[in-house]
Structure formats: structure tokens, C-alpha cells
Length: 244
Image (cartoon, rainbow, N blue to C red; front, side):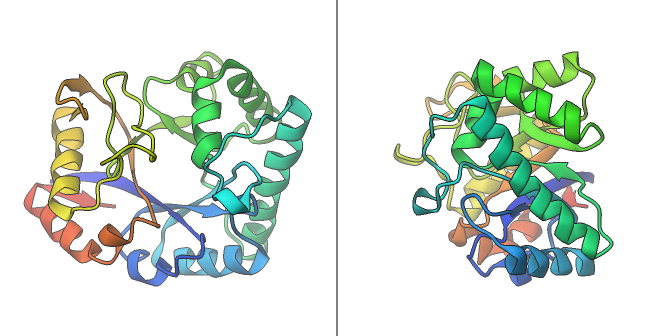
């Protein structure tokens, strides 16, 4: 049996936290960019505390209308001001509850920008180095940000997505494309099992590519999966995988 970390984006207004918190091992909590405020952060943190789930800040482009999934043309000052503010809000609530920030994971379009665009990678490295040098970043495997975190000896975990399809370059298929999101339990379990046991993934064009990860994401707004998460757990166990 292999034990893995499964993280989920929560505190995003989907009201699924009570369903999934007993089963996952870490969560990324929206902190004011695409969703979230003091009350939602606190409520989600308290549930995580109850079930022993590791918690992290989930900052994004400040664009609630598009749920943080559209790229905004920020400069470095705007990036630093907004991301710092969001993370600080999460940190302050966690501190109030006697909890610590285990990790930071960017959301949506900001996740992709900070993983692959050189200027956003540079801004992220500076921000983490200056303000959060001991906090892990969850970042995509084999990305530019991973290489720069390694070069600067900053802490991170490689992340893979259990409920998203990949293209041949190892990047996520955009949500605007058909079949970008895996909503079937058996397909998700098959993909995740291959990632865990074989360290590879079958892309949307059917080719196999290598993929290494230490944490695996399932999205909290993927309701077809979330509402059947007990089936996911059962199927993973049959595939010699447990979450912990």
C-alpha cells in the first residue's frame, strides 16, 4: 500500500468541505482573490484542524467574476501587493486558531503564470524568499518555477492533477477544451493509479509521458467526483493506494 498526499481547493463557496475533509490530507484555502473572506477561511481551517488536514493559502488573480481563471496583466508591484495581502489574510486567521501555514498553492490562471512565465516566476521567487522562506510551494512537475525553487534552495512539492487531462508537453489541457476535466470516478482512479505506481500519465493525444509528484490535486468544484468521493477512496484502496 502506497500512502499519498491528496490536496483539494476548498473554501470556494461549494459547501463540500464537510464531505471531503475526513478523507483528504491537505487543502488549499481561497483567501480573497477569486473567493474567500475571514469567515470562510476560519470555517475551513476549523474543519481542517478537526480532521488533521494540512492547510495552505490559495491566492489568485483578484477576479471573482471569472473565479480567478483569466490571466490579468499585472506588474510586479501589483503582484506583490495582492498575493502578499491574500496570504497574510490566511496566515492571520490560522495564527488566531493556533495553526500554521503548511504550504502555498496559487490558483487558476495565477498558478499557470507563476509556473511558466519568467517574470511571474521571478516575482514568486522573490516573494517567497523574502516573506515565506520556510513554507512549501505546491508547483507543477518539471516547470520553470520548480527549477528556480531548486536553484534558490526553497522548499516545494511537485504536484500532479488527478482530475485534469494533460497535453503532450506535460501541461494541463485548458478548461475551454472538451474533456479537460475528468468527472468519472473510474477514469480518475485509473489516471491517479498510473501516476502513483508508474510515474507517468496518458495524455489527451494518447501518448504516455513521465510525471513525478509528491502531492495530487482533486478540485473541490469538481462535484461529480466530490459527491462520490467515498467511491474514489474505495477504488484507490483496491489499487493499493491510501491517502494520508
